[in-house]
Image 1 (cartoon, helix red, strand yellow):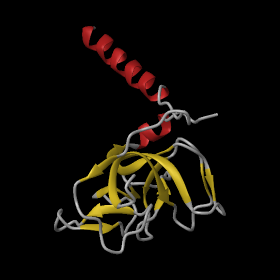
Image 2: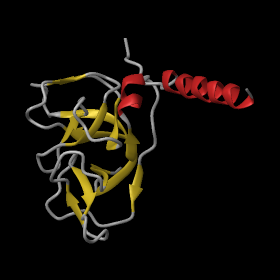
Image 3: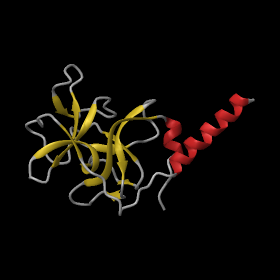
Length: 167
């Protein structure tokens, strides 16, 4: 019986934590940088990952749901291009994406350096790049969406369905 109550308490706590995700536009997040050189051809907003054979080599993501996703190329306060691995950043959206609602999980896409929203056909325990902080529709220029960057977070199908949708 004690095990049952602990299980119920854990489930209620996890569900409560999911509904408390704050996607408030007034909150700001500090950007955290990765201490490595940025790839030569990278541009601002591109999604970067570690090479699957050599983790010291940083490349633009090449395929959807890249499990080695590292961060996003961003310009720091000094004007230098760096690799952000946490915080609030703008990421380039793939051309085929029509719209992304706020609060949607974002993953790497099949286009080099681009991102896309997670869909219902993703692999079990997909590695996400982050979560959108605002809605986005195609036609906006530049084609970037603001996300809360948290690369390496693994999302299961059940967790995706539990995510609260902003009003």
